[in-house]
Length: 164
Image (cartoon, rainbow, N blue to C red):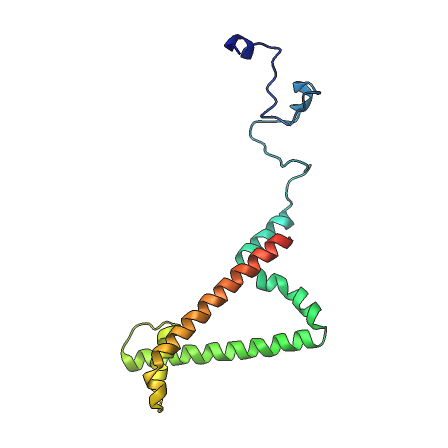
């Protein structure tokens, strides 16, 4: 193949346009501008509402957006009640954990304690000798469950994105 054939006006390159070989290039490029991009099969761009939903999905997470389906599957009476009870228990436990962390920070003269440190130092203050001797396991268990929780969030997020 010579370079003369590539420069020939009768030779049409269809690799960068949506024009099929049956159409003429001028018909397929009528609405094309160099700065525009459009997905194949779509005629309109994304609306502001779709953009807002994608932002919420990415920033808030799938937990909040998956709640309506969870309540629907649990039932109209049991779903909201169990959501309320679990929410109260979770907030109460987080409050206890934060209060323990502040107390142990003051007691041990440390500026900061993470969740694992808080549990470990809290178990070291236990009256039980066995619990004091195995307090390092409390730290490992908390770290393990934090990893499992984050992994679960990621898995749920991938499933949610695949469905939508």
